[in-house]
Image 1: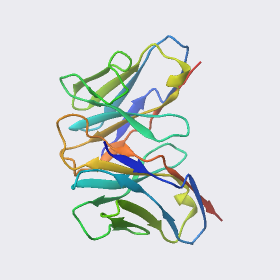
Image 2 (image 1 turned 90 degrees about the vertical axis):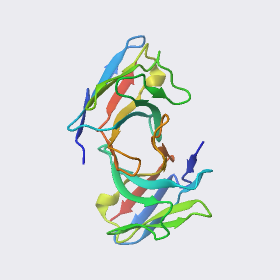
Image 3 (image 1 turned 30 degrees about the vertical axis):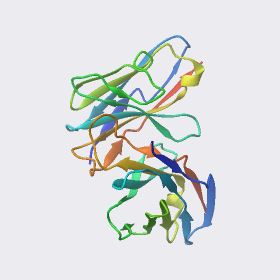
Length: 118
Length: 115
């Protein structure tokens, strides 16, 4: 079974600064997807960014980018120019690439609570 | 995208009773999932709701405790049976269209408190 580990329960950053959230995972599969989800106090889960394991290029979405190290099974999220609206729980998640044959939902890490200091 | 609604949004229930949570999607989707998020914790997959057949449950979750229905491609229900305070959680419906490379969307969740 796959596992996802987020070792930082809480992170704090000054507004406009850059912060990096860590995520490691364990899998025996070679093809999979990795995600970062954001959950603000409203509880709504919002997809921040995704990465396909077969792609060497790191995904970017505006101020959000990842550092994907497949051999090290590491998938960190960098948030540049942090804004107050970025304050939320951030969850790293894993999903197998091959659907079907039973449950193939997301496996989540425990989350990192990101605090933005004004 | 997919717009997902859940009913109820929250409820307070007595132990020993059951609650059925509804999930409605604005368009047909291939995959529907139910997750549990215990207070201050991450999301844990309960089961995959299969249209026209029995749900596929994850380890630690059983049909007698969490019966699931999925009569069509836009609707599913999760029942939390014979509730105890340990069932107090947020229950989230999640959907995905087509293959595994498609985005997975989440409903707003149902906050359940069992007294």
